[in-house]
Image 1 (tube, rainbow, N blue to C red):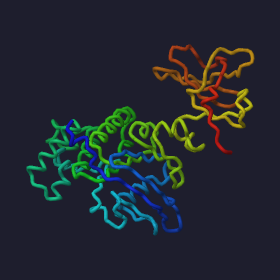
Image 2: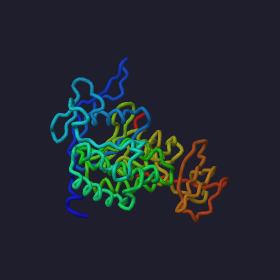
Image 3: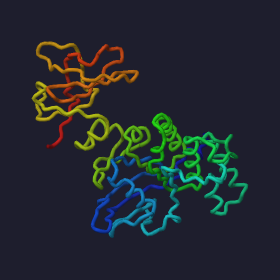
Image 4: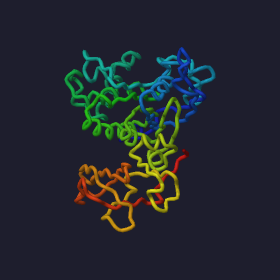
Amino acid sequence: MTAEETTAHGASLSIRRAGKTFPGGVVALAPTDLDLPAGEILVLLGPSGCGKTTLLRLVAGLGAPDPGGAVLFDGVDVTTVPIERRRVGMVFQSYALFPNMTVAENVGYGLKVRGEPKSSRDAEVGRLLDMVGLAELSDRPVDRISGGQRQRVALARAIAIRPKILLLDEPLSALDAALREKLRIELARLLRRFAITAIHVTHDQAEAMAIGDRIAVMNQGRIVQLGTPEDVYVRPADRFVAGFVGVMNRLPGRLLPGCGVAEAFFRPEAVAVGPPEAGSVVAMVTAATFFGAYRRLTLDVAGHAVEAEVPAERPVRPGDAVSLAVDPARLHVFPT
């Protein structure tokens, strides 16, 4: 990998009081402030309708923020600059490739439109296809390559124009689960290799964890937590984040002796499961799912469902009675 490949080519991004209200007074995005340093990968994570695609469109220039909002690239206000002059690259869920073109022609299309000489265009296309592992498919029509390969072509095409900001709108959601899991790791590797400032939109928490340097969790048109994947998982800001990112158990505090709170929230990995003992919290195993390295148990605790994890070799089966203990240091408390 050359120094040129690892140098951040992207712009810093600042969003100031940018909101979006649609006709009829529907607020899709509350006034939002956000800062990204050059080269950072930010994931916008949240359920459908939470405002993440609206925010992405404001950065792209596909929509204008409400009066008073601003979008800045490297400190320069681009709020009124149209998309074709913002130098943003976009990768969509459909990839939007040209089916009548080859892999190389798709990647080089933006450079051709710009009027780049064929010699320099071919050199850049060759470099990018080599980086994404598709050099041997350069002359193949895109309708004769796999979904994963098309995703890499779309990424290379978006990067070919050297965008200041790369925007990815759920680019993996149309793929099957096994391929999506493989490509999320590959996409994260490629984005870091190109070192372009990127915003990735998804509703898939595992995808967000694998790809983002930071994650902005959104709900009802607002960013409710912004932090590293570890911050968001280990220290969720509120009940919504706790429930949306990973599995979060909830039990009345009275069922956990000594916990000292009205409601206890905790992750499955905070639960210790053992043989039933006098004085312990007793639970009934209602489901045990094998995941290779561990088993995910569903436990019934006085009518409340609790998820726990045990090593795969533990012979725990539905119908077994077990004891349950929760690490007090890993309890979460949220306002009612």
